[in-house]
Image (cartoon, rainbow, N blue to C red; front, side):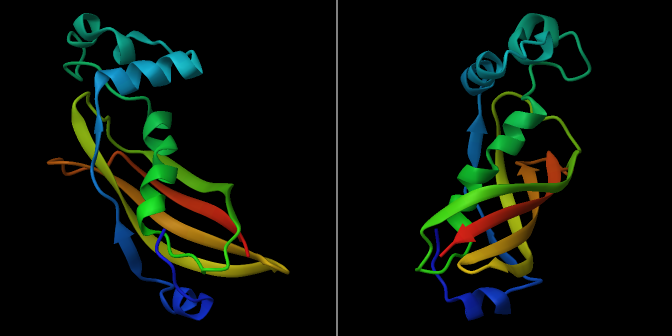
Length: 151
């Protein structure tokens, strides 16, 4: 994770702080997520049946795309060098806007929305996040994501 002072982080409030690298959402990843969550609906795991749908093939679970926020954020979220631990604090809003078809690539675009002191040694960051799909107009999802830093 990129390191910055807390004052530098506060100074970036309202600004885009970064865009992650692209991640490929292949059938192996989709099937592994289906197994882990026991959500094996055919639109995720059966390429032949899914080909007969308006999607034209299998699609990723919306929650798979959402779960990748942690991986994407690791490349771009600014943290103080005194950070000991970062935990997912929750989501204020999530909208799944477009399906991610198998073999597509996605990336996260992060804007720092708010920095709040919660308690001694705890800083809450709120990011506006969009997960973009390569070569598509609509993003996979948008979310307001909260992370708690322990310094």
